[in-house]
Length: 360
Ligand code: NAD
Ligand code: TYD
Image (cartoon, rainbow, N blue to C red):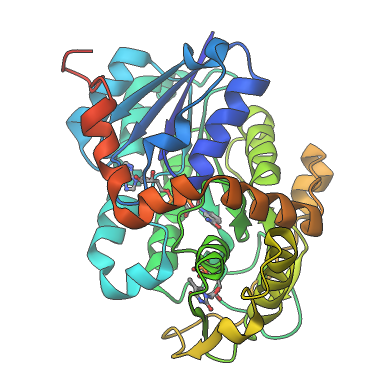
C-alpha cells in the first residue's frame, strides 16, 4: 500500500482530492494533516463509503510546526506529499499578510525539510516519490486583454497571497535544484465545485442569492477569471503525482474565461430557474468598492499537461455550474453551519483526536 500525505485535506480542493484518491486508488492509504483554520471543515470528509473511510486518517497539525510534521513523517513514512494547505483568500491576505507568509512559505519549507530528512534523497530517490506543490496561476500576475500564462511566464505576483505562493513555488524548485528533492509544481486557474468556502465568488453569490441578499461585485465586474471544475483539477493532480518528471511545472486551466459580472448574471439566471423563485434577480447585484490591486485577467495555456500527460478538462462549464448550484441547494445545512460558525465545534465535539503523540 502506498501512503499519500495530503496537507490541507479538510479544505475545498484538498477534500475533493482526498475523495478522488480514495475512490480511484484502492491501494492508497491517505493521511491528512490540517490545522483546521476557519477554512478547514471536517464535515468535508464525512460520509465516505465504508471501504474508503478505513484508509483515511486525520491529524490536526499545523504545517509550520516542524516537530509535529516530523512526527507525522516518522509515524507514516509517506512517499508522496500533495501540499494544499495554505491561506487561500486574496481579500484576507490584504488585511492580514503575516499568516500567509507563516503558513504558505514557512509551512512549505517545514514540509520540504521533512521530505529531505525522510526520503534520504542523497541516496537517490525511488520511483513514485514526489512532493507536489499545489499552486495557482495568480503567481504569474495579471494579463491584459490578450495572451495566456505559460509555464515560462515570469512570476510577477501582485497580492500578498500570490506573493506567498510564488515564494513557496520558488523554494520548492530550490530544494529540487539544491538537494535533488523530487518535486512537481502545478499552477491552476480558479476552481469551483462542492465544499468551497462561501467567501469565494461562486458559493458566496449562491448563498446570498438564495437568501435574497445583495450580490457584491467588485468594481466594474469586468475582471476575467478562467474557471475549472474541481474534479478536473483533482484528475490533473493525480496524473502529475503519479507521472510527472521530477522538477516539472504544469499549468492547469479550464479554458473557460469569463468576466465576473457575466458569471454572476449567469448564476442568478440558473439559480432562479432551479429554485423557481422570482426574487432571485439581477436587481440584487451591487457594484461595490474594488479590491485594492485587483488583478484584471487570468488565462492559462494548459498545453504542456495535455501533451505530456494527456490531461483535458472533462466537465463542461454549463454542466459543472448547474451541478454546483444544485449541490449548494442540497447542502444548505453545510452552508449555514459555516455562516453560524457551528462547523468550528465539530472537531472538538465529535472527533477522536489522532494527533501524533496523543491518544488515538
Ligand atoms: P481552502 O482555503 O479551502 O483550504 C485550505 C486548507 O488548508 C484548510 O483546510 C485549512 O484548514 C488548511 N490550512 C490552512 N493553514 C494551515 C496550516 N498552517 N497547517 C495546516 N493546514 C492549514 O483552500 P483551497 O481553495 O482548497 O486551496 C487549496 C490549495 O490550492 C491552496 O494551496 C491554493 O493556493 C491552491 N489553489 C486554489 C485555487 C482555487 O481556486 N481555490 C486555484 C489554484 C490553486
Ligand atoms: P475569488 O473567488 O476571491 O478568487 P480570486 O481572487 O482568487 O480570483 O474571486 C474571484 C473574482 O471575483 C475576483 O476577480 C474577485 C471577484 N469577487 C467579487 O467581485 N465579489 C466578491 O464578493 C468576491 C468574493 C470576489
